[in-house]
Structure formats: C-alpha cells, structure tokens
Length: 179
Image 1 (cartoon, rainbow, N blue to C red):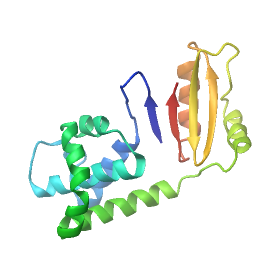
Image 2 (image 1 turned 180 degrees about the vertical axis):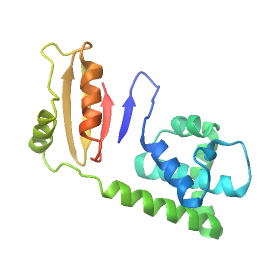
Image 3 (image 1 turned 120 degrees about the vertical axis):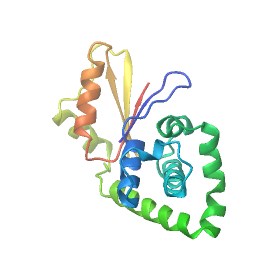
Image 4 (image 1 turned 45 degrees about the horizontal axis):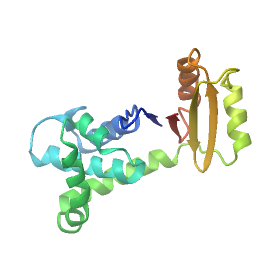
C-alpha cells in the first residue's frame, strides 16, 4: 500500500518504502534500519542502492521520500537510478543483490489482491464501512490495478474513513491519494 498526502509539492509515504527496506535488510542479513546508517561500506551501500532503484522502478516512489528515509540527499537517489544500468551490467555483487530484492518484492506485490471492476471495489469498501459523506470537503482516491474509486469525505470523518480504507485494503495492492 502506498499512501500519499498531496499538499502542494510535499509527499509523504507510509508503508511501501519502509516495507521494501525491511525486506532488503532481512534478505541480505543486515540489522533492521541499517540502510540509513552513514556507512559507505559496500555491505550497506549495495542494498541501499538496490532498494532505492527498486522503489523508483516498481512503485515510482518520489526521490524525496527515499532520501528522507535513507537519510541521504535526493541527488544521490537520482544518481543511484542513473547508475543502475552500468552497475547491473558490470558489478556482479550489485546485480545479485538487485535481482534478489526485485524478485522478492515483486512476489510480495503480485500476491496482493487487485480489483477487476469498479463495482467489486465499491462493494468491498461498503462492506468495510467506507462510505461517502453527505457534505464532502475532500476526496480519498483509491487505485487498485486499473480501477479508481473516489470516496467523498468531510473533514470531520476524514481520518476515520482513511483508517478504514487502510485497514480494509491491507492485503490488497493499492494506492491512496488525498485530493
């Protein structure tokens, strides 16, 4: 699940990149949270680079979010992305770690349910207590697969409806955007 709060140019993600970082550290045998260490040792640098590239490729996570979580510069995230092809072609350790992370993350993402039509998604949301407000002031937009549903909410029940959406869609592949 990806959750974005769109407030001008500021984006905040909650789960996907943290999940990817935890997956990366467990796959390569590093302590949880170690990707954000300031160490430039290859044992940290290679997984950090690979996780950044996977996040950009698979989930299109904004570089600012990756940089903030890794405690690095946004420019470095762009550098990781730009150097991916060269590293993949000529650096066997990087290629091995990247493939390991990419395949594991794709397996996790592929195992999640997606909705095939809008009626199915709407019924699922209704069964979980998610409904439109009588006086909408904001929109919670849910993307799952190729389907998009908008939930009109008032400021009063915004967080309640958002929490219900997150809980209901926990095992589903989706993106939530606040408009």
